[in-house]
Length: 99
Image (cartoon, rainbow, N blue to C red; front, side, top):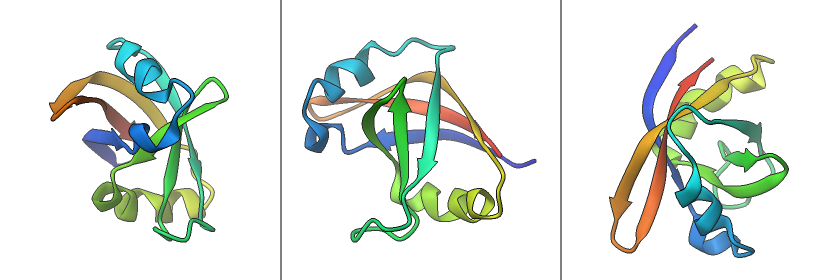
């Protein structure tokens, strides 16, 4: 099972509905759920990041391209919050993803 370390969650500012606040409030050790979104018109490898049932953002595109094929083969990843990365005005959760 491969490990994809320090994968950033992006796109929270496009989500609205408090997604940025939920993402910023995640603590180290929290888990999030990942869900493939192959019908996404912007990225065929898109992977949604969900906190409970709230869609807060996406796995960064460059990493999703490596992780999505495993998910498409039926493997269910686990995603653990390991920290945050400040990028401009946005705080991006960082995940360790095991597939």
